[in-house]
Image (cartoon, rainbow, N blue to C red; front, side, top):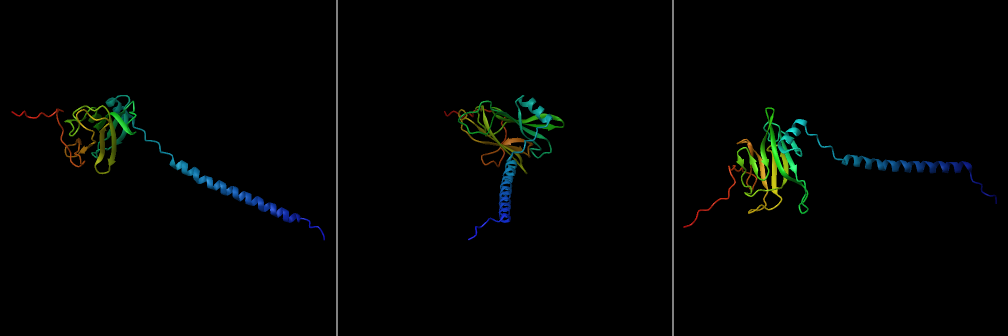
Length: 210
């Protein structure tokens, strides 16, 4: 029998096929990693819009150098620019869930070029006419704030005391612009009806029975 000698042309062809397969596998590997890079870029959070200088200055004039503007614009759907401003708590309570925890908040409004405060949350909730209804009589030192911008009703704010007020209990107070009286007011427990303001916060006295 004659020995079988390998065909050089066949070996070269086999080598070429191996090289092509390796290149194809490399391209598949490269192609599979590309969408992952794009998905990571798509998940990156967009940068928050910068607060205009005049609004930031007005906020600091109202609540001090640590004032933070959460949202601004035609918040009450009145055509006037307003801004929701807060002072965050400096020390976060360990037993309280994270969120917007504040010591003070306000809504300021640009009225013909002049900024004025039209709502304040400090130890109590107040507007230009007095103390808002349904709030605790005892002062509240810190609050949890939640807010949303309704397309029709405008800015809606919800204030919850972080601790139980003296002589009262923890309840969430809804505050929204009342277009009938043109100011921010609290709402009842159903968040449907506005409550009138009170000139003072006093503990109601009961008549003495004789």
